[in-house]
Length: 389
Image (cartoon, rainbow, N blue to C red; front, side, top):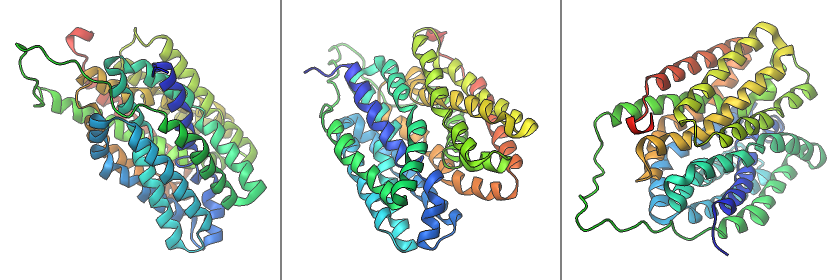
């Protein structure tokens, strides 16, 4: 059976949904019972989670280079095993030290198994045509929060937080791992250059450094916001005055909003440059934040829809914009380098936002909104290549 873009999208769409639901979206539901049971503060659990996220900044460029050379199958398969091992470790933890170590194992899984590695794998298999596949994967995985938050909450109520962790571990071993092992072992072979073709240089072109800095700035701010919202969205809505059940219901709108935005992007993928998509995506969060600050709990649904739509679009932009501006050569390593600042802020964001949330939910929202305006400014300064204009 040939490996087609459709098969890649279906495979990685399912595994990315499981991967995000069992890692990034886990603390929002389980941090509080986990902390109470093990003898830690909730903020300390988020600090452990933030430290786990920090591993992506350290390992991202190296894993990206590995994907460029050998394809995405190996790191993605290893990630499924690491996720399962870390989740089992969480379920068996009875001390803070054991819990922290388990989060670090999950952190290595996130480094090897989430979007950046999946995107690099797609570029290795399909080259410059990978943008549509990137959009397709995010289209499916956009349901990670819609599935993850309610399912984890239901499991925690039915079998406790330890049982919930074991259930997610089983899904990684029984579903994600076999799917990852079905992927091609190596990237597609690249055509040999003509004998009279000039040698291809890895040296940066004029203006590349400025583009990288601007792009890295936007990626970092949006990653920080996404990380904070993934970990704290239901508690944030609680702090604004929304009841527990209504907060979970409003937070569940993030997934459909992400998918709706990605469907629009998927339909227009050949007509709209990812730079334009990125500007629209970044502008949505500050609009939603202002609505929530001004109108309070009655704006919970509009806020989550705007956040979800913007986050859904920007996830595609993270993969498509470097491909559009720099091409497929060394894509995995470049994406890893671009995302080092993003991973640093993403790691700190859940813990810092937890502290801000204890002080003032409106202040926390306002700071995030100002960050989004900064990211929008960076994207406005970026320019498309003349051939793409």
